[in-house]
Length: 458
Image (cartoon, rainbow, N blue to C red; front, side):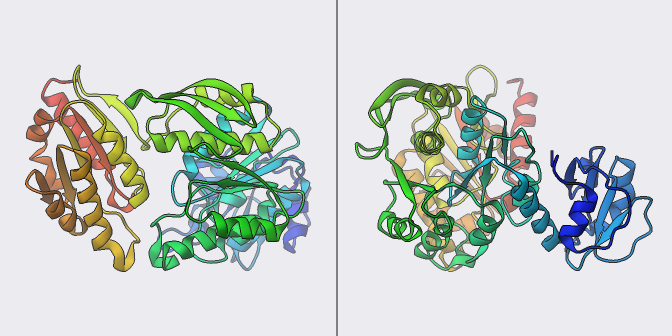
């Protein structure tokens, strides 16, 4: 990690006074609990937590220095800067400057983390790979990812999120990716963006800095293809396209849906093809697999390596991960986050399962004035697709439950649902739990598991 950067080099880069020994910095962290020996601790101030209050804890865990905004009493060297956040960006940029890694950047409204994980599974077959941890994809997470690059890193898979215009451009200026993609543009973060058209335009910032040596990955199944082609052409980059249809450089044939067990299909890459047994469920997951295959193809990886990586992929916690509740019931944890696009995909997957299905949905946040209508659409889709029962939690879900109909149930809070879980569990064969991060639906999962244990199911 960061083998090219010492504390003196970092200090010089930041313009921070430092006259001590050139200590070797092994990594960067903003969490005192995650410090490993040799780390530089960045004392980020925040609305709820100020990192300056945790410098002693970081030092106790092995931090050799700290980055601060005001004088502190510490037993390690402290580099003082005007903004720890801006300095973190500078450190990420510096680490990228010293790296020869091929950087791949991914953005989109849905599927970023899944495609990043698929890419990690593929690219590690070909060489040392660094990838964004979790969904740490913002102005803090991207520099932390870049800081993990070292002399051995061959590939860097960087997930990029945005809440406003200019975010993606800033992250690309730090990472300087050679291969980029916008997976899709959907109804997410509309409070910050305005409209889905604005989302498509803002996400396209990831293409703007590519240049003639770069490659853009284009999803032909999106309605924003013309906009994105224009931005790619303006950048002068090459294009590799993919589609679930018949057109594109990367396509799929003989698709067979295996439900919660994933799917089987033939992957076609520039005319070459190979059978794939893909473990992630849902048609949308196959689209994610094609995106990862396109990114790997642009990086020069062969079809065999791509297929091996796809077949070894694992679902991440909170993203359509199925578990057994006894012999005949299944719980699907899709609680990590939610927007209308990902909820549609979850509904389609749940509706295709055998027996009685139950969708438990928490609020989809950051939809602005469209919140009521978008939630109502989810109730309509669940009804139309044949979901047996629908439970909505929170005020925003009232329109969805009303639209779903007579077998819909509404609860004001997660705790209010708990008393009804024994009956709901008895009546259901497959349960899917989903909601935005702020809806904290993981507590519902805990309650369901507890209820199942009390009923002797597991």
